[in-house]
Length: 164
Image 1 (tube, one colour):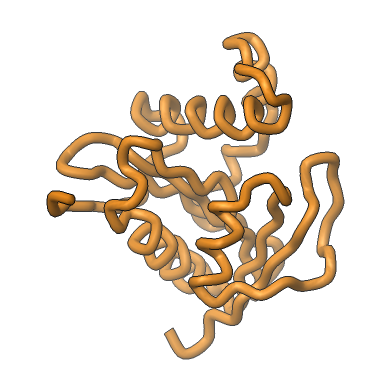
Image 2 (tube, helix red, strand yellow; image 1 turned 90 degrees about the vertical axis):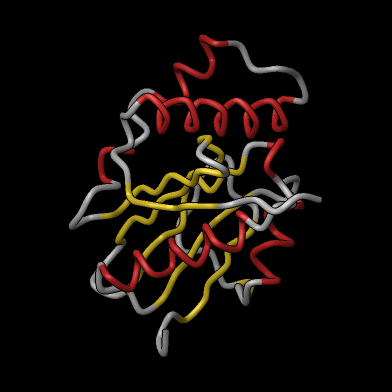
């Protein structure tokens, strides 16, 4: 494996790179859920009204990761209350998986949450997203009781951010 130079920075959710990453994210999670390729219309529908505009300070932050200058990853944090942030839209393009970007992205997202005032990070995910669940547990996230509900939520995780 060659060394990959990652940079992860805040970026508006509606830049061309951020939009393409969000589309790829939704395409992958929807296709896995439906067990068939999602159509462009389904991706459009899924992104419509998804609340991404909240991922700007002071309510949240959206980050884009670049590997060797190419847009490769994204993720967001959303403040749920004064001390709790939700991790959302965490995605690494398949070609860049295994290059260390996921760890760097989670570090940057946790730091962004702390900067927004969070002391705890929470997230929800699906059981079929086994790679994501493995990443979260490796990074110290533990299962917690459900803090929200929805059709695409099977398991909830949390992690204290104090002492960062």
